[in-house]
Image 1: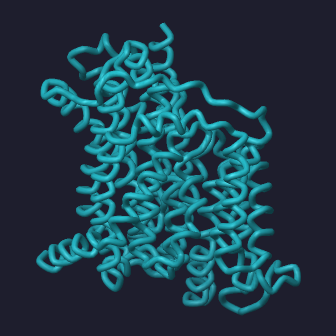
Image 2: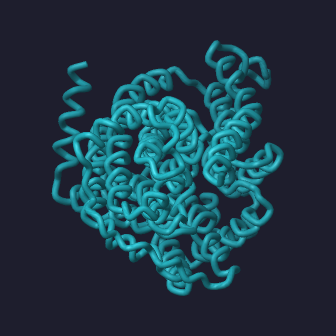
Image 3: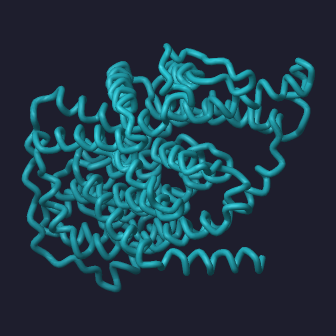
Length: 506
């Protein structure tokens, strides 16, 4: 206990260095800009800027990615409130009451509620990050090769199933990612596989290039396919962005409920912020003293959505850091960033690399304060960014994709790989497959393959080793849950989003 407290204190001291503070401020502001631009996403922003973190210390690089993540989730509420167009799917429920407040001349009030609720939800989620992550990390220390095999299968089933409309398409996406992960040298026998005579594929597909292509370049291609869109003019904020003591008191229970819901949804792999915001909105409407105001300009409605979607951020980091199971596409990219830095999710992050991990945790806490300050001071300026035309946005994204992929190793082949994955990502979206499942399979594939083949070597080819411990059986049960969970999540999402949208249209 004393050792943990010492690590936490040292983490805050390290996080308060001038370099880290500057990184927090810039990354959070950049994340808000990305979030408030309709059509972009937190995943795209994190993937696009991942190469920038390679030259930084590991903790600073993770803080930058965390700042972009949190900033983008909050930034989506700005366009949702001012132009009724959620910048990210996580702010879909925010638009229901946020835009109604804007039409009533209370845009400043709505933005203040969003900013304050996002800050509280994100900050409170850090409590569970500090509390649950070390506990799960201790469990991960007991894992051996058979457990790692089942863990990789669980990760693939949960995100391939939940994050797409079709379970079959989700599993197809995962299978495609697994196939791609076999490119390179065989991890056991050292035999070249599917390298097509290219020495640049000796170590397999560069994960960062794949991430940039699947999430960023594909988004540019999707935007370019459509007619160039000039954004709707954002409503001018004429009222003050302040909350009275009575309003803070009124939304406090809503924020606390949103935090609990968002944290639980975040910890559950595959659910995501879009489900959390509608679940929180619906639950708080039922428990509110003024349910009739929801959908007509309720500050509780804005607070419910924003507290929950920001609480997801801290919760989703827990399974990613401890078990290597990303909760959603953003944490899958963050996991890729960890691996590129030479760090493997699991127990080592809380033992061997504990100073770095707790510095990141402290930075994640401080990012919430930067988000609050930048949000309150800069919302009016960010509102102008929300109307930026696709004609400017598309070439900027393409240039950053090319520069970012080349900067990794300064090899032209990496740019080609990024382009190939950009086209693949475009086709994946067109056929409604799941790019997050492809990335996760690309990352977890080698882990699962090593676990499978080493386990069989240890057992002399007997499959009984995969059923030899209680942890294996628990993971098998979780894999079954991962396959069946899309049915539950699909019904839940339809109930939360469909019901509330219908109420609003009435």
